[in-house]
Image 1 (tube, rainbow, N blue to C red):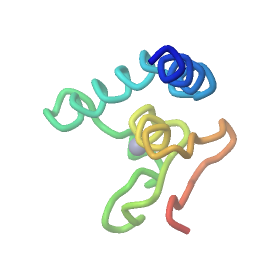
Image 2: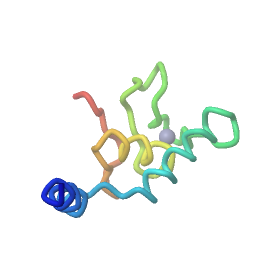
Image 3: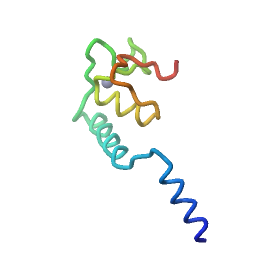
Image 4: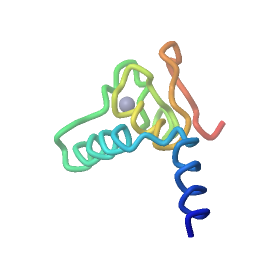
Amino acid sequence: MKKHIDHAIKALQETQFDIASLQEDVELLIDVATGKAHHLYSEGLCPAEVEGFDARNSDCPVCCAIARLQGRPLSKNQRKEAVNA
Ligand SMILES: [Zn+2]
């Protein structure tokens, strides 16, 4: 049993999974879903029918949260990311 626990602890320590960051991202997306927060939609870089649903703007906190949750964090200079490209 101890061996399994040690293995689980080691796996958790090795992962880059950040629970606090995950919770903040989910809370932000809940705010978007309930209308309390919105994408920036500046320069048309946020996901939409015209830009494409995989478009991301690294200046938009909502886009950044989506990208982190999808496991593809946006770099600061990355203006637009087509996630499934
Ligand atoms: Zn956005």
